[in-house]
Length: 612
Image 1 (tube, rainbow, N blue to C red):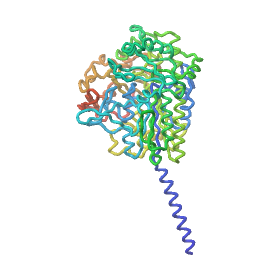
Image 2: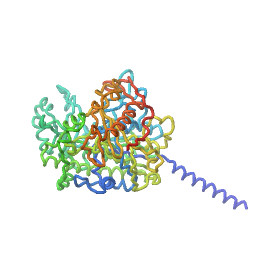
Image 3: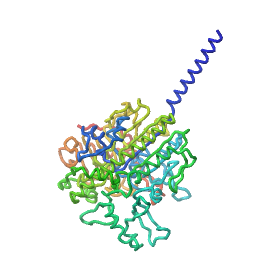
């Protein structure tokens, strides 16, 4: 009798331990890999084209994306995700803070600090507070400082951060750009801002700077040689003409083979870090802590592709030169109704004056660069999943297709910065070992925004984002959006001050409305200017997407659409100007903390906007 009882006790203890182990595993914090690309049009991805337009290829022509397509098959795609600012720094700040620009006070490329009264920890800092080891390599774009003893100091937000600028100077790149105060051990007569250089396979540095040639005559003629050697097409306008060392590089070939480019080294650095078992991890002159398998990992890789310079490796370039693309057509009549703010920037970024051959190269090289980047994404993903599964640890991947989009002669221009769909529509894919939260192959069509990224990752890491400490977050947990338990957005919003000047936008399924929000960028001055300005002064734009998907015909001053424009204008103003708006005079190098608020319409941002 006693023996039977003993057996039962042992069985119950074993069962309890097994259940406890399974429960512990279920509650274990997943490793998280967060990937962000740059200037990435959604139409470079076949899976996104299928979801949105029921075709594999871009409307412009051939694209390939097997690895990102694979992510959509493995996880859940939030196909109608939008950025909050079609410019690198404010867009990446919104992701890292989980806050709209009008709530963080970061509107463009300004250095800012974490000492202002409204500031909260960034996403990686919050993850570290929950026990995560945090790692970053590549582009970051969050220009944050801290103030100590009255001066701004660097404020690293990742525990382990590999600087892409130092990587470039160490030769781990194909291309780089940086300030040079000294050159080859000698102090320069005058510091050179944004000195562009290329690195050859044998480690030789080649320079593209007329200022360097002026100060160092031994380099005379090198800029012209570099332009020819790498077949570089720089952006130029008819008025100013071409420059040897100025203008975005829209087309060309990399100085390095695939895998040895700037982005290639980001990928290999992440892979090497995941495989590292030493106490320290080094890349060139940089050393950070090695990975600790006993702690959950939050890793962020910020790719530069397909941001300018658009210089894919030679093998990718040659392959894509076999394809002929349909160049977006531009009718100058569009300029007649285009808002003045947008028109000024469009003219600055104009491209329709290029030759047909130049336009083809620009598009061929862009999509070739995207295809190369897709291969790198696949390598990073595979290494991360292998690391997690080898350690028997749960995992999650958040893939963001561009911090914003890019024009390829759309509206007769290149670049980004405008509220058009081609600049702001950036799908997100979430893949997880937890298939209940993020089912394989699922497509979510409800609106999602970049402010959703931080609460999504925090929730996965174990945070209760309903707690007061997370009340500053503007977004939602995307797992809740996926299962239908989150509020459904009728609209998305954004605001940017860079390039175009202060402008905000609101987008619904059928309409997109944008307007100028102030006459200048002086923080705290004329915050509510738009409320009192004449409608003409708002320089408005309104597009009806079902009839005008390319947003060419501005209806903002069409009497038939007056009521719709007014409803959208009032909703947009109430949110971005009146629902807890923050502006800060950050001052030079982010040393200021003078803060200004506008809160005349609290609660206006309720996700609801019905338009008849």
